Image 1 (cartoon, helix red, strand yellow):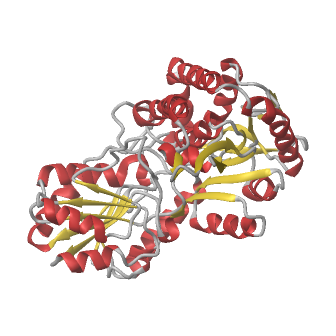
Image 2 (tube, one colour):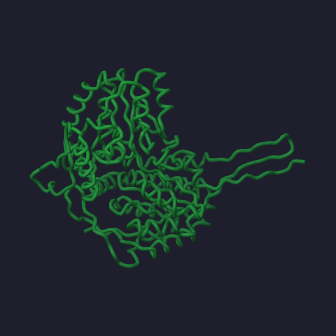
Image 3 (tube, rainbow, N blue to C red):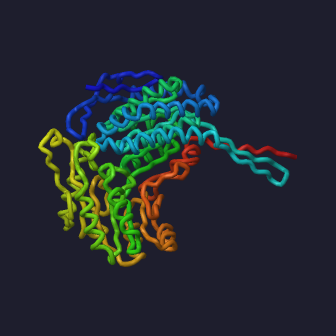
Length: 481
């Protein structure tokens, strides 16, 4: 039984109250580790350590900060297999995905911001020979980074790297149901030479750790990725203190396939964009809109490819689809499938709990599921399911599909498949979404801004937007006459 510890003031320490939460392994449904059930007292200690470390870290030369972040990236690369195995066992995702995506991207996040901070600069403006204005950026102080369970290290590093590069000290709260790679990162941070208190990681529940962290008077900014419901609470809790907040929340993403699309590429990518990580990625396309002229053919081929996905042990190299992250989430997704049936949806494939005749039968598995026949305004097509479930909806015109795609309260990402360049630009501009892919999915450039509109988010992460979020901007005006 692995017992995870908090990382406070440069040391791995148990929670003050000595209480722990059981952490089951999703693939087998068996408890394999224990996570600190931390409280506000642990948060207080972490914030105090971060506050104490801030003067030294904020005055550390940029080049030295970058060197330490690159060293941390080196250690992630060195121990990639250890991180990947921990991520797979903790989340239920396939080991191959953790090796290929989660851990390499986490390394890249640290390397990117280690480089970006050396290029981060202000602007200057000369006013008709009478004055010189220039801007400068300074770190905020102690910041909170709250990350989700679906891409644990990937999204934690996406926040930590710019926050630390900009000179802030951090108190991080990973999801309590996927704590393992954050715990490993604690160990690597110390090995990399990160000064004590610069990075603190407190494990525990939202009410016991997240809320006191968000509300702490010494926390200057909150970067959060998770549900819209929790994001709304954070916005409400921080409103009176005017803290900076960045909220990356839910999505109900549209995948729009026009009749002139590259059929094979659109088909293969649709399978990937729906069922990667069991559909537990905020960017997955859960509503598949297909132009009526190719609807039947596309639907039938998509069903064939979906049925061919192999469900099984995430550790096995041949497995395409692993387990959902927890029993609670598994039951929620199954309930959503039942709701779709009750609304008149036709299950084209999946929707069942697979039987393995092994220890996997105690895990949290669900067959990849495709549903058709539901109105675009049904709750199934309006509410985020966040699992291996997608709906198919035919459309006849460009205006019609844009209206249906924009009908939800979310606006995170969308994909458009067409070989008509003018149409691609036209539709992309009209979609109410923070990110639109054309003839691709999940192609990311770390320099670009990332975030949603409507109830999918507030603010932008990535590139210089992230460094600006974690900085205070000051304008200095000097009279020249």
